[in-house]
Length: 112
Length: 113
Image 1 (cartoon, rainbow over the protein chains, first blue to last red):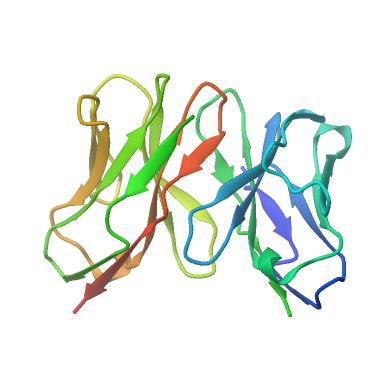
Image 2 (image 1 turned 90 degrees about the vertical axis):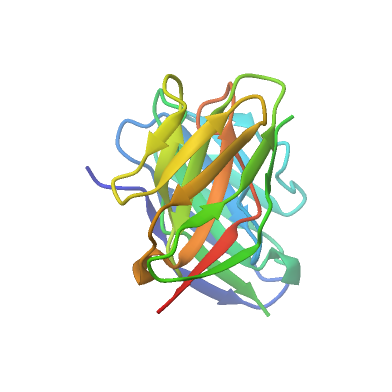
């Protein structure tokens, strides 16, 4: 069974630019999550999807972050415009009828 | 609301020594508990989990953790560590929403030869 796929693995952008991350969850997993992991901290949930609907986006900075999950499968997380404090690893995870979440390799974003 | 506290940010040990990584949680609902491991430039890998049943859970590579409800703890232990165990370890708690996890700050385990 293929794992959670994320791309790109690394991204360097200048502040005020925009960036997008892509995630393909494990096949059959209805629930998809985006987490932000700032250096030295544990991951923090940004948004949770159930199929293509948003379940929880209370921690998503909506003035600059947006996310969508087309057709209940792949998902894209976008930041526009980026700030220096957005430098972090963005982790995608998925789950199916289980408390356990499976994580991708993450995208490391550096904003300069 | 849920929260997780990992009491040690860094734990240095010598190879073949025992180790304990401490984790305490708070939650107003029944919980599921997890330990994840993260190697440099990698994502999170599930190490072990407590969902229900026996309070002592084990991983395939010799780690174990015990769910202690009265002390709201889920400490991770290994009787003899290897160099390859060097990594960052995260304790996480999940509740009623499957997969929505609250993580601790992480503990960096460094095993010295």
